[in-house]
Image (cartoon, rainbow, N blue to C red; front, side, top):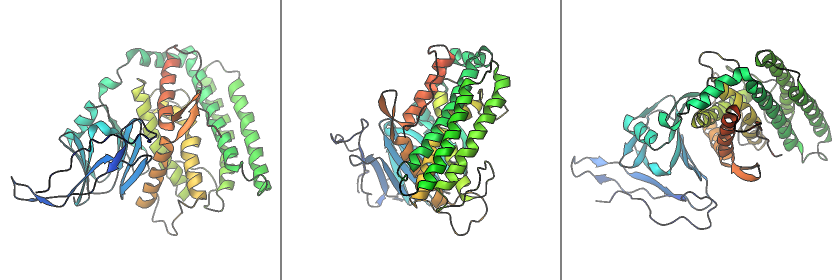
Length: 411
């Protein structure tokens, strides 16, 4: 009988750029017979060590694993999939059960699951929660459906009280203004980043984009210096200015991708065109990351400042997401379209994206979240910056820091 694969005890390569254990994929073992039941057991694949320097692996359709210093992020989708627990390992079964993947719990950082077609054992969920591993369930459009984690990881009464007080004490207004201005600045910087190498080759497009950037920066100054003293009165005016900047921004995006895909305007839920479907799905993935960061910081996801309160609307998640939309999702979608990594199918059956397109987009987004940006004097993964910003929100609302500084994309 061939023994079950076990953890490789060899140390990670010293040349690896990561502090977490390097991981590699071990070969599948041949089929074997269970001595107790007499039944044939399925071959097992143990995810133990990646080669040094490798950050991402698409194990098969619908199953992607990304490595970071914090651990592994596993994204699973597809009908018939199963997530369970075996000893100290997470077991992933695909479709008819012909392939089984096993990942040690202590390597996991997050598990992302599609909302349809998957089954999850309670034992697995409990084991993940006990180890502080976040489980995110996302819909077909990428929007978060649910998140599961131990409630003891986010217990912070003082922070949530301060969050509610900020609606009246002026800190909520300052935070809303800073986030809106940060969003516009990142949008402007992304446009500048996309055209920085075409000044000589495409001067007309370069000039047109620069004019849009100038418009956006003027709007940003108006947001920062608006004479507002009340959040309720200021919110509509700030959102109006942000919308004016967005009009210039999306016109610039349309110019950047006009050779790859048709994109006339930004549309939100229910969008039928390819580019808006990509953006909406990508924002859903980003929402999941921001939501988890907000919970980890001890904040209430449904009490925001820039976005209005409404039952079922995670206002603070939407607030913090704003400063990351352009540098994370928009940049990923624009680059994938211009490089030909994503192409609109000749025929689209209804709305939404097909499974292959979703898999490619999630892969690129996870890579972007694991990439590094310079922020506050050092380089951090974008995923870590999201968490840092959530904790900065908490520190600002409780008065531990005097000013909230939104994340600024380095172009």
